[in-house]
Length: 403
Image (cartoon, rainbow, N blue to C red; front, side, top):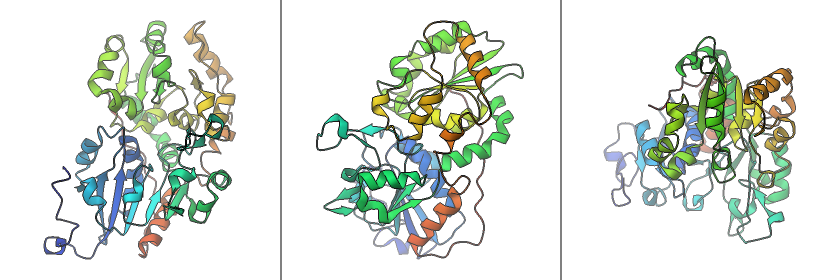
């Protein structure tokens, strides 16, 4: 929908003439990227079955907005043009990124779109490199005209309060330690590992190696693209299955066709590729090894209890106080030398129960509590009484492979 084709229903000056259910509270889901949209769905479903609430979506401006319109369209949700969304009042808005959110007229909940606040970004005033701040916790993005923008800042861990106090102390009064939805759903999904493996076509006698890459020039795919053909060449196909799991920004930054074209030889050599719309948490739950980089998927991989190996790690881009930096201190590195099979076996042999406990305990200080805490926050800001039902963290759906 273009900015010239405004929706007249279910919101608008004369929407009451056309809607079936009147006087609903309206919640605006602000989707900047496919990644943030996937994270926001865990929150949007917390108001399902409530006939008092109408949820609508909008695509916010972002450099990685490719794919967002198709993502929202695939939900069958009402999609408002951005211009209309900024000219309309809502009872609540939810976002997992900070771009242009000052244009929204609603009490705003902001939440991280990954595992906490790991990556450092340059200060907008062009300060020196040592003044880089973790994205999502910095005053320059959380404040405008001397005021804190969000009505609530969702944090996954109590420790984030201290970090926020150092980077934007003005925002502490609206900070809410809620937990981590992806962590909770990943843990709830682990008992369904067998069905996920079957969906990924992992044989009963095969081991699954998941290679995950975030986006950007310092990512695994940006710097170590030779790892995939090397794994395929060295690992016998009867014993191993290799699945690539790329951040949606890789897909939508370069184009789905281009990514598949770049990997065409690997696909012919036995690589399986997870498309950007599939639920990545199911892939991690199915893994026997996770090979990653400084993306959130590596951190969530540690929560599965399986070995995590890192193929490069740009320490300068990661906050040393983050859980991701702690993972980098204990996870083995993939070496360009020596047998990859030997490296995988060594990582598995060194794996002990609780090896990543200190890492995973830093992901969330409210394990299993995201749904309850987040729903309480939503209904408080909507000034509605919560439903009497208890929200249940459900496993993620089975994944599918790119065709």
